[in-house]
Structure formats: structure tokens, C-alpha cells
Image 1 (cartoon, rainbow, N blue to C red):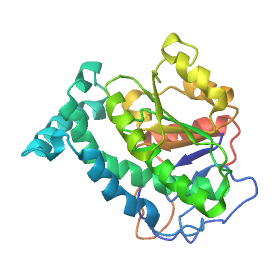
Image 2: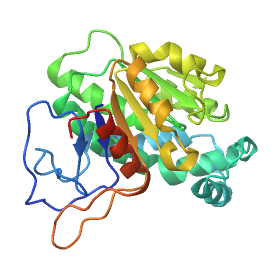
Image 3: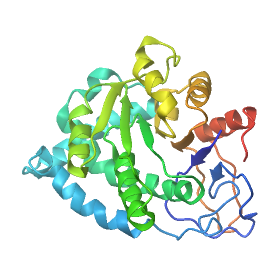
Length: 286
């Protein structure tokens, strides 16, 4: 059950990292048994992604409420109200109907989510073949797919490995993110498919018909803060892992402990700890 769990930006060097191991398909960076340094990665975000973000966001914001006088402040205040409910898992579909609130989320979280995904994707790129088809569940506003596209483009230029275009998709509980996701795809030059899914329902349910249809083609599945906020169930993940033919799972969520002064690894907590337990039960290489 290949998973990448990443929940912090900069980590101290871990003196206890055991180094690379044959068949290592699940990477728990600091907080478990590996650090970015010992994984052969630099200490910060890939420069190409860091350079691309400001320019891209400027284009993404153009003509939206974020450029209006007082618009950003109003949007972020509306976003804060939704986020408070999301942290408690009490959000409702109606909460996402306010477009200004969604743009407030973009202004507040897009960069953070893109950088976070970028750090984890570097690990994936170092140890896995190029991805051909990726989905971000709970992926509005497509920040993780933006990071994937930037890093994949860089890898393609360096290795000239890609013959077919990267297929990207977002699975969301609400339709409200569609316009922003379409805009991200348009600005990047890669269309992003958008479909309804509900991670709290069985994979075989009608709510997840589009995801079930796409699953056999997937080789990367990003869980975008759906474990804690939406209560994503183990049976859903188990079924998706099986139907996708053991795709790589990249989980972004709460539960990654902060590095301590002694640099010693700390165990995962919360939703990531539960995911770790699931992986062990499936016989994952950890």
C-alpha cells in the first residue's frame, strides 16, 4: 500500500534514519523514520515550484474579487468561517456556495497546499516511475495538481520521459470548486477533470461512480485533507487501493508531529496514525 505522508515544510536532519531500503514504497518523513536529508532531498521546496507560484497566483487572481478594493479581506474573513466548521467536521454543502469564500480559501491556502504537496512529490518522483494519471480527492482548488504539473514538467524536460500528457482529475463533495479548478487547468495548459465523490460512502456507491470508473487508470491518489475533515473511512481506502492496482497514495492531513530539539523521530498522530495502522494491516512496506 504505497503511501507518502507529509505534513511539514522544513525538517531537522534525523541521525536515526536507516537510509534507503530495497522495495521502499512508503515514506514517512520526520516524525517517523526518514528525513528529507537522509532521503536524498534538499531542505526546502523545489526552486522551480517556488518560482512558479507567485507568477501563477497573479494570473489566477486576475479579474477576481481578490483584486478588488477590500476584496481579499472580505474573502478571507468568509473563508475563516467555513474553515472553523471544517476543522470540526460540521461543514455542509451550502457553506461552499459563496464564491468569495472560495477565493478566500485560495488566497489563504493555495500556496501552502502546493508547497506541501511539492515536498511529498519530490519523494515520490525519486522512488517511483512517472505518473500518468492522478486524482486529488477533496482537491479543490487543485493546488496539489498544480504542484504535480510543475514538477512533472521539470522532470519531463530533464528526462524526456513523457510521451502522453499527464491526466489530472479532482474528486469533490461539492460542485462549487469546479470553476476555480477549470481556471487552474486552463492557466496551466492541462485540463483537469472534475467529478463528484464522497469519501464517507463506499467506493461502489452511486456517489462514487465516476471515481470507480477512473480508478483502474490511476497511479497517484492524493488525499487532500479529507481524512480528518471528512472522516474518510478505511473500507473506502481499502477498496480504492485494490481497484487502482495499488496506486501510490499521497496523504496530506493533520497528524505530523513537529521536530524536537533532539532530532529524534516522533510517532504520527490522529488521522495519519490511523492511516499508518491501515497500511500495516494491508502488509505495506514501511
